[in-house]
Amino acid sequence: MVGVSDVATSCASEMSWASDSVEGWHAMTEMQPAILALLAITAALGLLVLAVVTTTAFVKVSVVLFLVRNALGTQTIPPNIVLYAAALILTMFVSAPIAEQTYDRITDPRLRYQSLDDWAEAAKAGSQPLLEHLKKFTNEEQRRFFLSSTEKVWPEEMRARVTADDFAILVPSFLISELKRAFEIGFLLYLPFIVIDLIVTTILMAMGMSMVSPTIIAVPFKLFLFVAIDGWSRLMHGLVLSYTMPGAL
Image 1 (spheres, rainbow, N blue to C red):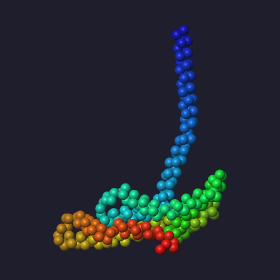
Image 2 (cartoon, helix red, strand yellow):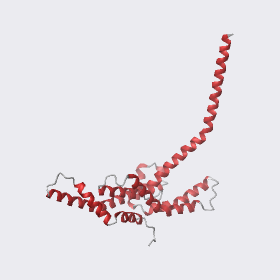
Image 3 (cartoon, rainbow, N blue to C red):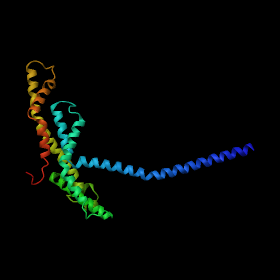
Image 4 (tube, rainbow, N blue to C red):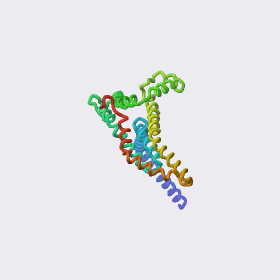
């Protein structure tokens, strides 16, 4: 009797474990759509950040701000988060017309969003303002390079469909064009501060104070010069006005 009781208890335990496993499997199955939705949202946010960085003024503005900080020799002042915030705010200001035009196009009452064709049409219409922005601020030489390089890098069936106005050509061309302009601006901004460094170094050497770091003496003069000419305002204004729209006064 004891053996039969043990067997019955073991069978009941196994049945309970199997029941719990089935319930757990059903629970996981029910959670799969939520998990997939979360992964899709995470991927979409990652792509959105990538798009903001590569197709807007953020690249040029942030690079210029960091170059200015290096030229001043203030190390980590302003902090990185402040410079990134300033770059993001200026980018939002410059990109506001593009965002408004995109919103107007995708909310057109004629778009029904009832089929894949409707969604494709909305995507094409909504991307047009950004496409025009990229074309306006992209170097023609870069566009020609990336278009011609498709003959060596892309398969023939992809090459046959690409044009100079495709995002695949415009985005890398725009990114390189923005980096080039940012470093050109940075070079011009560096020049007066290099002159200050040279003057301070020469004076210290003439006074026999070669053990004194020129940076310690030069930074206050750089800050004075930058503040005296209202450097932050002039810099920010120049960056914003470098994205003037056609026909603007």
